[in-house]
Image (cartoon, rainbow over all chains, first blue to last red; front, side, top):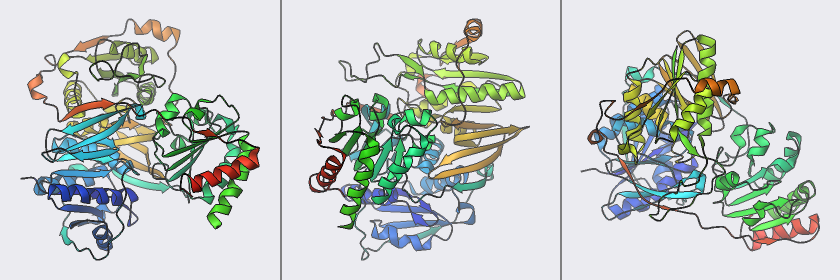
Length: 329
Length: 257
């Protein structure tokens, strides 16, 4: 009998990613409905201190696998360890965030376990036999599919910002279990040589609550400073349309759309973006959309909750001042 | 050096999605293209061959129309193409496709396989990594830079907030992220040559597989379309007035900020 809902918790420099707490929050509800324990699994080095955070976030049990070889994420070592743990523990369900790590790890782990995988899900609910049905955007959000697994464990990666983390409850307790890392030599064939994290005080696009994005109307790479100034007042991420990326103004990692990142922030501010269908696919599920564009006929106004027809070089700086007033009030 | 490029034919990025009478995605009248991320894989495969010699083969799984994608790949500079086509694969999931692809590739000489990091239709980003697992070789996903020297591979891959550099020995499976290269367009001469290049079609039986070996792990319950967003309000006034009103609406009406 399969047991437990496993959340593979992601930590970076011993800080738990927001999406992992979101999964614990939603996982708690699924575990309660199924009468199953919610298990947080953390891999890394020196991770003991993280158990309290995931316990407060909803876990009934915390499995810590602490090893120098797990200090940095590598596909092989993480697959090796999780494959053995999951084979031993037989959980019903295994969930992780659809982050760079989740996207790399989950397919390899699923193939080794011989199971399916629902990637990049934006919704889930249990059917009568406690198999989860996942909602996934396809064609970058132009349509959705609802998929389920025919085998256990059910595996999925969930898009950040899909669910809400629970308010931390420090009075919760959990069973803490330490497992040793047993990594096959064959899983150590690819060697991590260097990690280069770009210094940025801004949040990742996919995790950001607010995104300020600029398109062809920005006119050139030097003009993004005005968007950055607006973004920094409210702790937003900065994005770009494909036109701006193809023009070489911004790197691809900033691109929002069907051939870039799909995002769903609370607020998306589109500046000088016409609203091509492939861009709308990538940001159309944002809660609120603001459009600032000179062209009153621009397609972006058809999806914007609030639109300003005007020159973004005039509007954005005054909007930055208005946001400052709000934030300080 | 023997290079395999896995590609997929997808809807054009400008395609509007509609459902047919049975509630499935309607492909009628839709312009089909090579998945844009697979173009980076094709380009990288051709560049490796140009630099190191050998042969580069494109493989796809699909229906008869997928031949068009393979012909385009051949016109870009791929040497030969393989279409795996079988009615039993119509609803194949990523597990099934990885099993089939691995079986096909296991019969070919392969030092390095590369695919796009994600297909823009199903958005799954699984096949390349699953293939590596099935072939029991290392995978390096979402690469932005690649150097192959002798049998040694150094790749820079995208991670959240930065990059990392991974080294491995051949054989490996890689997946390509945008930024790896600028894919070439097929030349007129390339298009002419492509007509004479070998394009082989294989069924499951040709691969020694049967539908019974390939019970899918995932099933699709239904498809839906997103609710159309409605145009909201355009805020009047000059820049200062509009910005002031927008800030007020975001706080008082939208309850953000």
